[in-house]
Length: 176
Figure 1 (tube, rainbow, N blue to C red):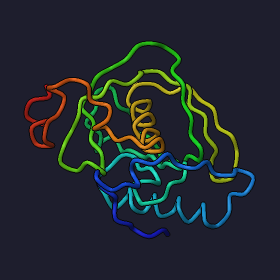
Figure 2 (figure 1 turned 60 degrees about the vertical axis):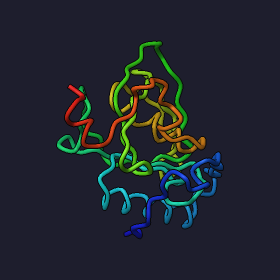
Figure 3 (figure 1 turned 30 degrees about the horizontal axis):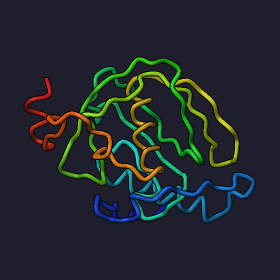
Figure 4 (figure 1 turned 45 degrees about the vertical axis):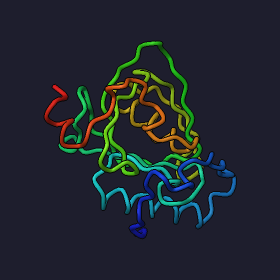
């Protein structure tokens, strides 16, 4: 069982750095400890994904997991808790979708972000096995969001519409 760590919030310089790749030939106890801490921190909070920089560690690791009752996105599906080492994605179509996103590192503000609807995902699991799959919709959005953290971005960097911000409560009221 990992430790529940404080989630770093915007303004913390660790969130602006590009994260280092993990040597997948050497997935040691340190890497597994980071993954366990990410899992525990995610389970303790109200997010659907978390990246290592959000707990102050600039390594290319994310953990995602979403129960259907916790998801407020249209066309969302349940996602089993999954740790991803060195995740990479590329679009497989030009079709995009704009929706409000939340973020553990931006606790009060939601932002409208455009994301690709269909992507090819590649990552390594905790045993160092390479996983490749196509993902779509909400799951694709979540992966793009978490990978942004690994490249030093938050959703605040991705909002382009002047009316693209709302408080957490206003999103529920006005995002029909």
